[in-house]
Image (cartoon, rainbow, N blue to C red; front, side, top):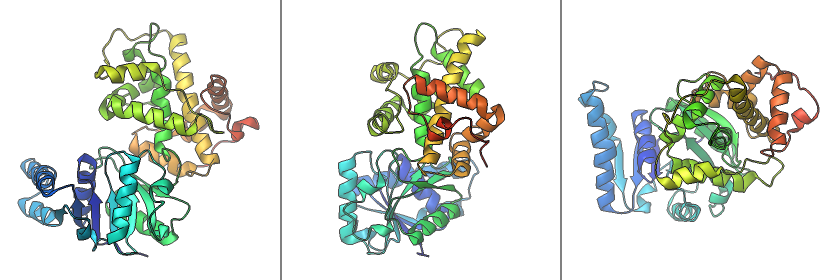
Length: 374
């Protein structure tokens, strides 16, 4: 198995820095790349020095531990300085042309056996890596925000990713105290297709009958969570949510999976520059009204999750683990289906498909399936 000791990170913003600190705290030497020397210094001061000093001030680490972690991290403005890296993680902004160029530049200076991965949450790994020589050493390593707290990492295999590369990345994630799941290259990978369609479905109900406060409450009750889907959208940023919705619809709407239309309500709210107002009025308590949204929300979750299994994107066990870890849902989609019974789950899937949001998964086209094996 490929040995990883030195990790390069391209892009040292919020996500890249969290990945870098996590790796350095786990014993890896980290070299990050930024655009110029001024940014290298600024990012080091902000994301390494200041961040670690705050941990010391809160009693979460000793000054000695801070010095040790900080000493494991260095920055550069030159791609050539990444030549010693065993693994390079690209964490630049979500622009496909930029990411493709980064991998061309890396390919010119890095060792031919260095593993190259992208932390993209949007683009297919195969497309990003098209110009990399020896594509067997390429993959995706998708951390979830905030990467210093959220423990899930999707290890994404594209068609050409070798077994050795995949095994090395799984081991790397585990040594970083993360929970890795195996995912096949697919639009949005495994967790985001479920979550994005969930908030798209919920947002589409905003109007005279349902206010934001009611929809937030419905999602909390339906999923058994402390913070609902409207709250999570605010935390993620409505710009991120809107662009992800557009991207997923573009990728999947015309395929045999299907995907919901982007809600006008989400577009308008994003363009307003304001988050959802979680206290925009009284919470409705009419059971019939609440059940309409609950059924469509759960139906969309069950439908896309089943499609992901049929496409061999992820195993039921890993999707269950991933959703419970990344989204903090007490139960994943398959445990929810098993608990309510597959007859009721089939009814909710049928409702969702009839609404035009998704195509019917074969699992449910054949009748009422057996409970999921977890």
